[in-house]
Image 1 (cartoon, rainbow, N blue to C red):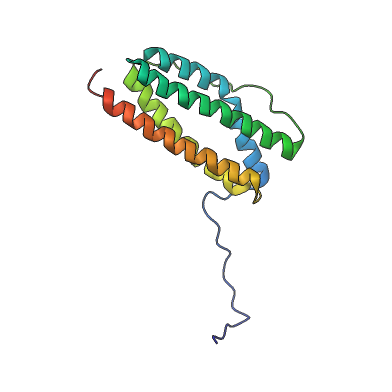
Image 2: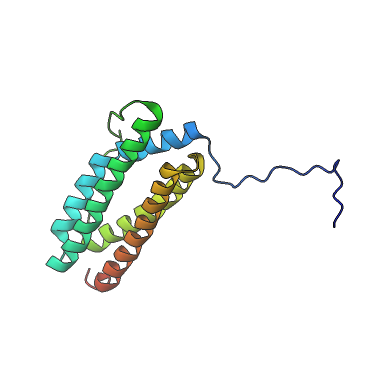
Length: 157
């Protein structure tokens, strides 16, 4: 057996994305409040899609995002007993071109993964954390789909 010095102290390891439950709840609120701008963005991108197949891919992503919003609202409601109200103060920026919109969407999905990782870390172990993990996987799937769409269209603009 190995002997361990009981007086030896080490610092507690903390990942860089570690947040408290309160911070995680604030990030959930922030994510949900941007819902209106997201809807405008998806609607615009769907209209710009050059084929019905590409529009269908973006619609499936939009529908997933709507489900994520409902799940985040449910998590917030169950933990705090309150509803999320209000909308983001950010001004909506119109899409200049389809490929520019795809690039913006891809970057948005990847930054959502980073934000959601913080939310995941701040929630207690169990169904809420598992749900956010599923949302993170969806965001990565969306990023792959946007990458695919960008690859199909990058030479067209």
